[in-house]
Image 1: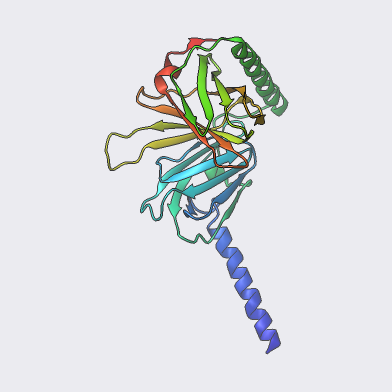
Image 2: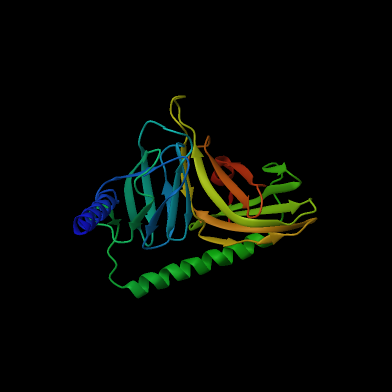
Length: 278
């Protein structure tokens, strides 16, 4: 009897593992998220862009980790998922809603060739890495130039909870868009930064359709971890070039680590489209 029970437990365990494999991105095109807990997707290389298709789901990327969550219960439809990671590697699929997903962790480090697309063939990995490092160094040098520019924009920002976050300067070049923000802390408590998120919002024409949100990661960032009471600091970012219609906007979210004083600035796309060349 004891041997039979052990056999049945082993059979159930194997069945559970098979279910995990069947629901992984290597086997199907759809991952499932809920509105109560995030699911996690782990990629082999750092993530640089996430496009969710609609606003029914939200995403946060941190290096090789992508976290997905539904914005409301039962959106009722699938939405597209597009992830760019590493040196021009892509994952394409869909996100669906489940109240209690069977899988909360998707290991995408060994994707099948059909799920991972590369736009070019790398003949020399060292040359590719060197070129990427050179580009990063050039972008970082441009941020130093941006830091020296005076404040040119005074109408894009938010003042809330004794904190003021303002967009100050925008520039473009052939590599990136460059943004300078100023954060002033008028409160008597320090503002400790958790993370800064970037996403493009493109309104849809029909009311029945949600806005299209595209999450991006900065190429280079110069940030201050803590803004003390009654002080201010500058934040510099270089983000990938991304052209959208004038009605679109770039949303920049500063989130506090030990509190809920999150700040979001919506930058009209026109500021990026008409920025001077750095």
